[in-house]
Length: 390
Image 1 (spheres, helix red, strand yellow):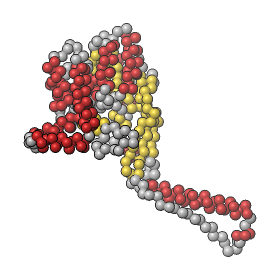
Image 2 (cartoon, rainbow, N blue to C red):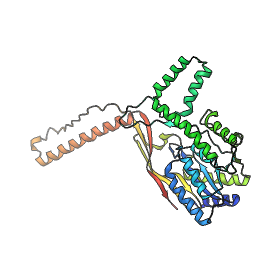
Image 3 (cartoon, rainbow, N blue to C red):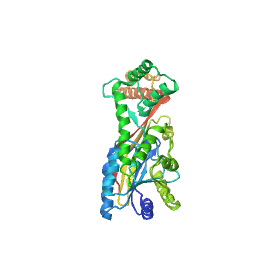
Image 4 (cartoon, helix red, strand yellow):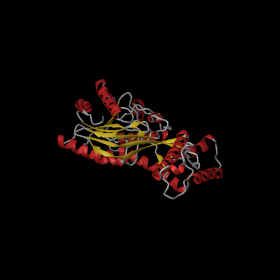
């Protein structure tokens, strides 16, 4: 359980002692089918923890953000990084394993990035989420568009295909504009510029300051020169790129990993990737898991968790429902004449026949539904919010 935190607090205190710091954990779980993302709603609980840590210590000489996430909203890292600097002039990030996309950007704002042997960063090239206004026609677009994919398309046409004629290139761009529409291309350009601006601003916070040439090299590498967004950047490659990588001692790395294992269990990160495993019977199309935590913010002072009711639902491709008319007839023995049956008994029999017809029709519909193929499985965390647990 996420609220059973004695062993985690003990590990945090050992890390604090080893590093001479205050530890703040921001852990966004990536449980299969139920992933948490970095978002703006984490700002308030993070602030509460910083207030508690600074109140106890009067001053946070060194702050360690223990970070795990596969990404999230790209406007949030700057807000988090600048808030951390309000409480401590020395800010480091500890990466136990995954710190992708938006989490990598948070790490860029740290003085040093403590990375163990399993720690991974990622490129920061953003994806544009296509939002369709209510009532507007749905465009024939993927739900996410890799911003760098647009530039790569132009580069492919020019460099690989060898297209140099300006008229042909103009036609190629016209095709792109027809498919994505000018407003979407405008959003792509804004995202392209924004991600580089924020990355530079984050790196400019590092102490001691980084050289301008080094900042440019890091931004180019993370935003453009690593061509696959899912590429994991280990600590050796991170150092080669120019990041301020710190290698923990063997004992410290063990503490960092043991703390990760605690969260892995508490947030059920090792759950099955197979959604069908959550449905015990063929006729069960709903699965509910109340009071489910998918992320947490924790320090030695308190614990917040993002919790809600997790629901999975099988959506079946049900054929058009046939008209089902059920007319049950009661055959009486020859020795019994219908007119001899008292009226109240006749009425009771008629009611039973009507109830039986309804039950048969419902059973037929249920069987048609049960035998219909599963089209997809939808999952939602209903009523999710940050809640203080300790």
